[in-house]
Each structure stands twice: as C-alpha cells, then as structure tokens.
Length: 239
Image (cartoon, rainbow, N blue to C red; front, side):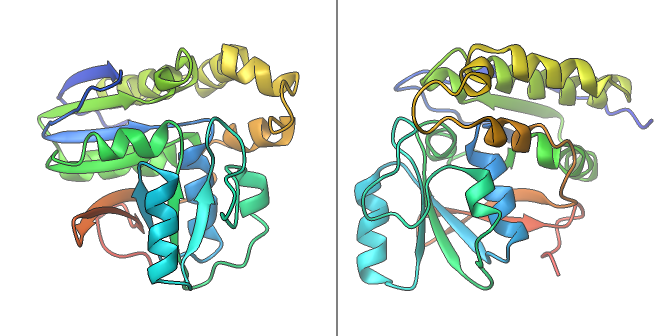
C-alpha cells in the first residue's frame, strides 16, 4: 500500500481551545460525522456546521427550507428536524437539501478549527476516502482533532486517528482492532448497553460500517460559515 511522509499530530480538543493548522481532520465517530455522511448519501447538498442550537434555529428562521439536524448532550433539540442518529437520517429524503448541523462535539471541533487552511471531517464510514483525499493533497503536516473529549474521553475518535495514522505512515492496518476499540470505549459501551433513552445499539452498529461511503467530506467557508460538502477524493464535487 502507498505510504505518505507527513508529520502527524493527534490533538484532543479541550474547551475553550482553538486549532489553527495547515491540514486538519476533525473526527467525531459517535456520531456527528457518521450521521453527516448518511445525510450526504441520502441526497443532502451541503451541511452548514454551527456551534449552538440558537444559530441553527436562526438560520432556519431566515431559510425555512433548511433542515436542522443534531443534538445537545445527545438529546433531541426542540425545533430540529432530526436528532443525531445516523440510522434515522439514513431513512430520510434529503435530496438537494441544505442542512444545518449542531452537535456537542463534532461541529464544535470544526468551528474551533475554522481558521485552518484545509479541514476534512471524518468517521470510520468514510475512512478510506479520507485517506485517499489526504494522499491526493500530500500535506506536510496533518493534525487530527479529537472532539469526543469535549463530552467524554474520546477513545473512539483516537481509534480512527490511530488507524489513519498507521495507514498513512505504514500503508496498512488491521481495521478490526481499531473498530473493536470503538466498541470497547466508554462511549461505545454506553451504546452497547443503551445507557439513556437516546443511545441505541443500532447507531453504534452504523458507526462501525467501515468505508461504507466512497466520498470524503471537506469544509469550505461560505458567508463566514463552515460548510461541509461530500467530495470525490480528488477534490472535485461529488456527482
């Protein structure tokens, strides 16, 4: 497998920390960027990422056609169309829609990395596409931003960062070992045992579907807001 020479940093995001780097991969495995990938697969055109529910609701007021998606501490947000469940979003008809996503971890990581030169968002369902996009860009430095630490220990996000790092530097990795880390993480175990009304085992199963989608997800700035698009690994718009 192809190897890439790069300096790699894995950074666990802490409040109120901000990240500014050459090439950033913001990771939220459970569940934000798994859910975002499912939204693109269901036809979403783009996803505006915001920090607060109030920002999302204000955008909806100005643009009633927007679809709101996300959670606050895992729970459904009043006025939002969808919660953070990738399984529920996977059944939605989102063709041509603009979504606004607010989550407790993933979107916070993007908002706090917004001055970086290039930002990808990743989870295991787009791991290979993320890797191919990194190889296409050939950055000299890569910063993996672990967002799960904002509301937990982030072990599931570290698993993806470590997996991608090994693929980048060595060209191969045992995916099973890293997916097992997701299941065994404290957050993963909360889903195994369905701790709380909103944690469902089927959502954990969804985040473990390695390389389910062939596209990468990249941030572009529009109207001073970070906007996520599904792109081909060469950077061209997804057709």
